[in-house]
Image (cartoon, rainbow, N blue to C red; front, side):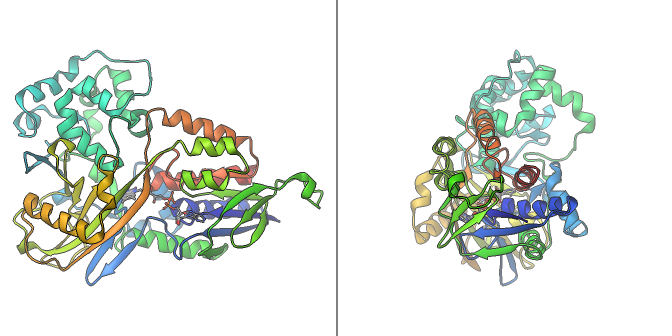
Length: 474
Ligand SMILES: Cc1cc2nc3c(=O)[nH]c(=O)nc-3n(C[C@H](O)[C@H](O)[C@H](O)COP(=O)(O)OP(=O)(O)OC[C@H]3O[C@@H](n4cnc5c(N)ncnc54)[C@H](O)[C@@H]3O)c2cc1C
């Protein structure tokens, strides 16, 4: 029998546990799975809370369907029929300019204007900015495939204004990142491909337009889904499934993972054996670390100082989500979108406001709206250090000024995500390839988590499943 430990009970660790079980069953192997989670609850950053008739997400509120792992997991868990798409009526984003919210021009997909006319009519860019953006068609392509920061790429192809006024808030919002450091190759490689293959993003979009969706702007919201009871429904069904076969232990913080020297091993078995230290000490044949990279680094410092040092090179940013419930009649703005993103150049204190109850039904009672306001990130880390009272005051003041939110909210809660957002800096893919190469040479050890090759829920699931395959296939 193999004893496999999974450290970390977020979506990556839970997905890893399920995949280990499936592979072991396929190979008729007797495997004992133990999942060790430091906190008293599973799910990691993913958490859904009911507050009266509001359904409030602490972190993620939807996931993308064009990466198959999320959908495949739902199928396995019998959740496919329960998936809900985003509300088509409000499928657009707003961007702030000079303190006012304007819609992202129709057809503008993160950095490509697929339609010229809405861009020409939009007040979000000056005439000079619009002409420069449309001149992207003629900008000479770079085809060397080298990694570049989001800021460098967009300034080079689309101009400074389109970068500052549109791309920085739209993309920066997703990654809570500093766009001067954010690796385009690790986050939005399809734009590099478009430049490489078609010579220009606009040219690529025009050629691909027949397969594109119309009537949307900003993020491709038509591709996202959730569940009637929120992301928590996915997590709780997954936990129930994993609990059928795994020994789940919450409140057990792992302190170190060390390979047992052959000299200390009494058996003649050639399999690797790891000693995991919590409050007790226990041996396992294989270990999946599904924790943030800086935690993995600290757990492995004795086992592999070199791997630990590489893992420590991945930086993280913090963000704070402030959820608040309001009467619609207390808000001047019609909230006819999924949310508002705020360019750094506007010098405000907010990153974005999600009009969460506009995205999916059942998130707020009739006549009410659920807002989730994001602050902090890599560009304003100091705001995450404020205490809850100061954060609430700041958010209420900004919501009042930007959207005309008045009156007392039904509730207002602060959710902190400290060091929760891995930052994919230029060179990230090379760093991860190097880390995985070192891990590859370490039988029985695997890494999973959102710091590897994608920050979204499907990426995290994919990382857990890949880690499971590594430890089972050896
Ligand atoms: C505010 C926010 C909004 C987001 N929005 C979206 C979205 O809309 N769509 C989307 O697809 N993605 C979104 N994401 C990203 C996505 O939710 C995460 O990347 C994903 O859930 C990470 O899962 P994970 O299991 O890799 O990590 P985590 O959820 O961080 O789980 C790691 C687990 O390891 C445990 N742990 C840590 N140290 C130890 C230790 N020493 N011993 C044992 N256990 C330990 C932790 O307690 C935790 O439970 C968002 C993230 C945040 C923070």
